[in-house]
Image 1 (cartoon, one colour):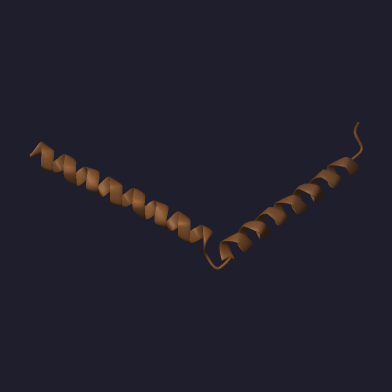
Image 2 (image 1 turned 45 degrees about the horizontal axis):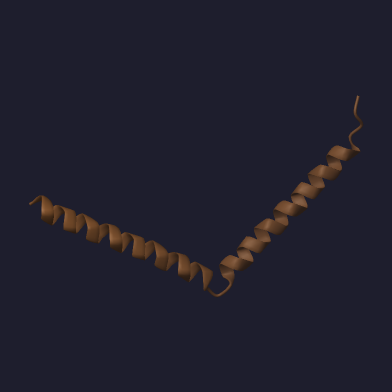
Length: 62
């Protein structure tokens, strides 16, 4: 009985790992939407960081 449970558990684990790998590959080979979204978020973060940095530099220190 333990042998059958171990086989089923191993099979389920292998299928889950294969499914996760499949989703990762699909995300990387997608139509570019995820890549565009990532670039958009990075650009917004960089712009926000630059804005905050310049605002902090403009504040006089006591």
